[in-house]
Image (cartoon, rainbow, N blue to C red):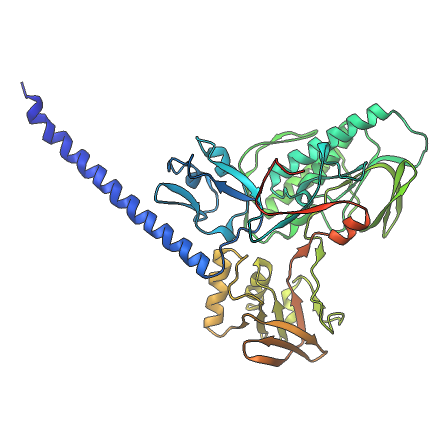
Length: 444
């Protein structure tokens, strides 16, 4: 019979080797993640663009469950024994890291100490400080597909219950609710309105899908089911933008929902106990209004002389129309960088990229790497820490580290993103607050 003393080296040595190997791997991984974090900060990429995880180091046990759950590779990593946002600018706020954490060490926050996020002040049912006007989805700060669907459904449930309590009101032309926007939140709300038998219309200034239709990412991730009225539980997983839009089309076909696209809402006015919603095509009287449009529906303007010229546009729609032209792209986000990449395939196009920052902080890593390579190869002329100051039919003047430059130009594509329609909301009397690190669910 073999003694325990004789067996001990047989098991202890491999165990010790395994433990030592794990320790070395952990140290190397931690050092690599720490270096990535330092590089992100040095490049000006240290601020998350929106909803993001806040990690409590006192509760974090360093298990790495959040790192493994995050669908965005390289955003989260362990530094020492604590989970850390090592590439904050690439975080899109999926929230699955919070759901995966076994110790509740992660919460989701709006804004940081140095970069605030403006969000409307909302009460129960997404109701604003203007009774009868509700907000859901991206405009409320919840742009993720699952969150937006759930919020759109919950808000319309609240509206339907409130309308039942109020009872029927006279007026053949009086709608129960006008839903503005047909992204995930607006679509869910519209299906809910149809399920409750409400008299409603859904308007969208663009097309089906809202901001999803213009999403720059190759994949959209919906990691947990969402309940879609009339459809049931929806679990999409990782889908392309086109696949998601095809799913929305199928939903419209199955339910008979008929949103009114290409109809821009200009104003919402109080009319006694109701509202009048004025669009560029019609006027609607309604008991309630649900604003479910995105934050990027209104393009951010350049604010320089000459921006009203026909050659200035705010989105790349057809790259081939710029063949043989000198094109300036203004911006440093994904839409700007992807426009620059797309135009490199158009024959004879001379591309200039102008960005006010030193680093492409809000763009995805693959887009940053691709455009940096195009710049190094001379395919795209990149002007950093620069801004346009005047546009003429034949030139664009930019101001930067080299002073004032006048560049020959045939077309300008200003990819500056959109702005929350804060002035419009203020005109409606809707209060907006800027949050610097407020935990989701604790606002209001």
